[in-house]
Length: 419
Ligand code: UD1
Image (tube, rainbow, N blue to C red):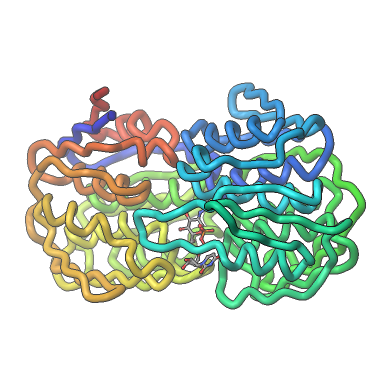
């Protein structure tokens, strides 16, 4: 298993080009199965998770070609309506195949994803939403079996809580249902809007895109899709946090500033200077005495749970008491003990981490527990005295494209050790 060796090397400086969004491209890849033919997706990040999704689609019978950052997915010969445990257990987003397969082929069998480093992550809303559209769901031997008689039937379904994954799955299924579906309290994350727009390009009839009520008028068939992946707002946020923690100045380009509202507001509140243009954001923390902050994660447009670990690392370097409360995943705090190994002073009280910041961080061997926790440890390593060794960085490879080369180009000192 590969590790990173990270050493402090002063403030990061320069421009970094942001890749396509992992969380946006995964449901779009699954959506390709709703059509017969070759769908194309551009600006696809080269990540472990995108290759896992390709593997899942291949098992189902899709033919996939990669050409630089473009992916073509030929769904003409789907012949195996099953997503196996061996793949789904490695990436929960594999569950996105459920909605498209049952809507198009009337039946499928998809492994339950199982646990996660952040605690329980149920899929009950995915199942309830499909049941509302008329699917018969049977959970047996660790698999979800979904079956319909004829076609899915449009219906009104209200998500009891905001769920990105369930919204995506039910939205995809509803595009081929008979009649109209009204999906209330849908998630409005940019990745859902991007999916809805890709589906619209395939011929789906969706109203209310970008709002909490999606109205989907089912159609007989969808055409293959073609479109780009939106920029990864979490990757962009991570590089801006890297600029802040090193008190540097970094411009993230090829991104969508409008997707970063809550995060940029926090950066400004703690004293970073933010400038932005049409498709870039620059964070300048040079010479800044940053202030502590209290952060609460919320569904979009609130502060993203996927940025709390990175901000926690940053706040550990800021004098005073800060807090990070995660209302989406109450247990998403595996990085706390590892940050403390680097000298941070963070304690946990239920769903809140209390950070007594400003003490010196010192390098140590630490272990990555999940994707964003890995990024937080790298950020801490950029300022921890001497060397930090981060093991299990396969988590990082799931979601950050060329992370070490992009960081090195900004002046960071880190190397990958193959192990
Ligand atoms: C997606 C993102 C993940 C991000 C999360 C929240 C992808 C591939 N992953 O995950 O990076 O951290 O959104 O922004 O896009 N829930 C249920 N029942 C369900 C589904 C969800 O109770 O059936 C709960 C979850 O436990 C959680 C909350 O709903 O507390 C939100 O989860 P959800 O938005 O579904 O997250 P994911 O789509 O899995």
